[in-house]
Image 1 (cartoon, rainbow, N blue to C red):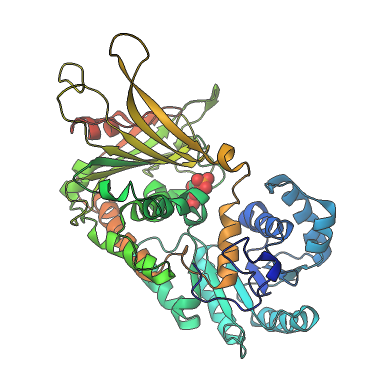
Image 2 (cartoon, rainbow, N blue to C red):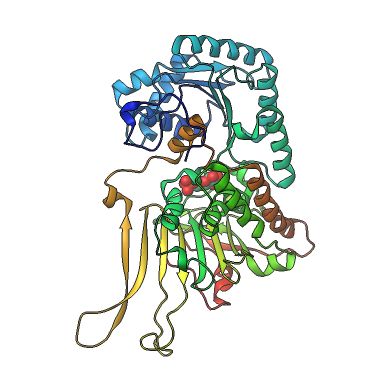
Amino acid sequence: MNPHAPTAANPLREGLSNRQMPQPCSVVIFGASGDLTFRKLIPALYNLAADADLPAATNIIGFARREKTDESWRAELKETTAKSSRSGLNEQIWQTFGSRVYYHPSEFGQAAGYQSLAQRLDTLDTQSATFGNRLFYLSVSPTDYEGILTQLAAAGLNRPRDGAWTRVIVEKPFGTDLASAYALNEAVGRVFREKDTYRIDHYLGKETAQNIMVLRFANSIFEPLWNHRYIDHVQITAAEPLGVEQRGPYYEKSGALRDMVQNHLLQLLCLTAMEPPTDLGADSIRDEKVKVIRSLRPMTPADVARNVVRGQYAAGAIAGKEVPDYRAEDRVSPQSMTETYAALKVSVDNWRWAGVPFYIRVGKRLAKSGTEIAVQFKNAPSVLFNLPDEPLGPNVLVIRIQPDEGISLRIQCKMPGNAIHIEPVKMDFHYGTSFGKASPEAYERLLLDAMSGDATLFARRDEVEGAWRFIDAIEDAWHQTPNPPPLCTYPSGSWGPKEADDLLELEGRAWRRM
Ligand code: BG6
């Protein structure tokens, strides 16, 4: 998958993996005191080290405003990594890993902080043979992106030395609409080349999301059926029982559509709907995804009223525990009009998918946690077994992204006995039982790919902007038109507003029960 093959291969890994060990580098994390750093980034780097996937010389430098020392940050990280790491924490591995972790306190806008960072990186290069390779990770509020980029450029940190590389990973949200995403792309583009810019969408790093292409293009039985002749519709669901937690101020401005649909769910849709790429190069794959985004039928305000349902959670119970209204959550406006749920009917106007609706639903405080893609095939002809007065259900291929990662296919079977009774059964594949080992966390794969120069699982500029163009039309219909469609409510612990059920029922369909 890696078109920029790194040079420092570890011969012991040959034959075990299709990836070579990336070159050693210094990873600089802006936003070192942030939640993402503690919960995801450091545990991911630690697990890469524990699995011997991280070059031993890799340095990790945390850059943030708060005053801390290397030692105090290491102590904090050790505690939080022990809680968040998928493999726990091994004292011996941590000793080696932790000794390469450093803290660099500075204001984001302070030039001196970047000059001293440059010196520090030079020293680390000499000590640990990282050869000037640098990966900058922007895990800060988007309002800080531009300032950090400007300072990096002023300190010359964006320019690679001869034979070395510098890359930047930008966390989501990548803009809040097309205009802001465009402006951010311009700002990043002034400092880093597109090929060195890695826009993260952690859904693409999930093992099961990567398996969508393998399922489609490494097997011969699905592709002939994968089109409007055999598929009735596709449902993509991302359900979370969690509420907005401590993220009120961010979520109030975002809502479910911007938070999850613009990025994660449209990416899943692209992987499901795309044509086979010419090869596995990052740009070949991303070219095909962009074509899907360009084929999404843009929505007029009337389409939005017909095809999109927005909802907000009211009080209710999750796993037997009372939970409050969204409007009563921490730092959320009591009059908030922010959606915590969205259901959409999306049309992909191309030859393969003409007339096949893609239904997307996403919500917080729903009954159960689960992300899946359900491909529902057309019914068997109404002769022999699938009779009009006793219709059989359709075949459904379900790709479970999480939890219980796997794939199942629903088929009709004769029940044992002397009469013909037909019942649906499932052919089921579970990652856990088939491979007997836990999937790596999405951030592990993504960090490793960025270090290796493989941008396949990162969003390209045109993908991000195309997705915003589609989403902006819906946001505008909700917030800029005189008679916007209503914001429905749903009790916490339910499956969302009734209006979302109506969206499918009107067309003789129903959401899958998860
Ligand atoms: C994030 C969203 O990108 O994805 C969150 O901002 C959401 O609101 C999260 O909870 C879901 O990710 P995952 O990996 O838990 O499905």
